[in-house]
Length: 97
Image (tube, rainbow, N blue to C red; front, side, top):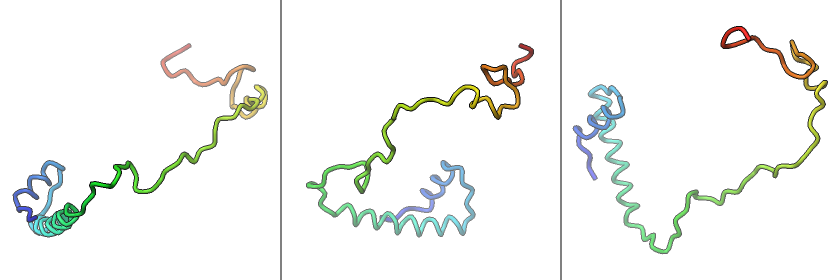
């Protein structure tokens, strides 16, 4: 399936790509080869192939949530530059508090 020079220029403009004349010629040839290959794939019978989101089976690799005791407050505040015994102290962002 050939692609025209004008089509490549239009697509490059839509993609906000500034291609030189040499780059446009190269892209025209390369995109033409890609589209020719895609036409070859169109000839493959896929009627019996089940649609899928991934080419391989994907499963969740994360462990399940497990309840665990939280860190003691004094340990959590131990390395804080400033704290008031209950919370971290940070500089006011929106003005004086």
